[in-house]
Structure formats: structure tokens, C-alpha cells
Length: 169
Image (cartoon, rainbow, N blue to C red):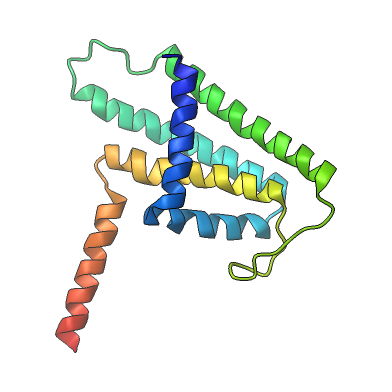
């Protein structure tokens, strides 16, 4: 199977997960709200920072997995680096396409008053989606491989909170 198809499949699976799972929705809503408070240039810089953090935590998690093997495979391969470049190309070409569509077809900004009073553009939503994908990858995939399961710790914290609340009542 072509590795690019595999990557794009993973991208769509990540989008589906973010929309259907509670952990994904918990990231999407604040990310969209935050993306409307900053201008697109800053949002793109934020996306670049997230991509670098995802790259670093991805290498660290790969190192953890690599150290558990017999170390005959390489830690960093050119194929994995190519996929990082493909990811960045996809993000930025997607943003450019959405921005082009916005320039041609959208005259006004719009609002989601249930989320925030700020004005939205489809470009800000696209940037926010890509930021949410990166945050999801860092927090729920790479951190888990590094031995820190954020979702399990949140569930444990909620359980402790509920138990403490019962004891207080």
C-alpha cells in the first residue's frame, strides 16, 4: 500500500475520532474558540509550533518503542521524515485552498453564538482543525506512548473527585 494513502487514511481517521469521541470534541471546541481570537498569521505560527512539538514527542515516543526492540530497525527513517513533510504540505495546502475558497465565495464572517461571540472564517476553522489534530496527536497518542496516558489520568481524577464528593456529603 502506498504510504501516502496510509497517511491520508490516518488523517481522516483522526478527524473522525476528533468528531465522534469525547476526548476529540473536548479539544475541538476550545481550539476553534481560540482560533477566532487570534489572527490567522498567529494561528499558523501556533500550528507550526504544534507541528514541531508533535515531531519532537513523536521521535521521543518512537525512541521508547525502539528501545524495547532488538534495535535492528532504525529509529528515524527517511520515510518517516517524508511523511512529516507530507503532513505539513497537506496542512498548508489545505489552508491555502480554504483561504482561496473564502476569498471567492464568502463575503461575510459568521458566528457560532453557542461557542463564542467572535467572528469566524472558514480559514480560521481549517487552521483550528489542523491545530486540534496536532494537539490530539501530542496529548492522546504520543504522550500515551511515552507512558503518560492523559485520558486515563483524567478518568482517575474524575473518579477521585466523585469519591471525595460522596465522602463530603
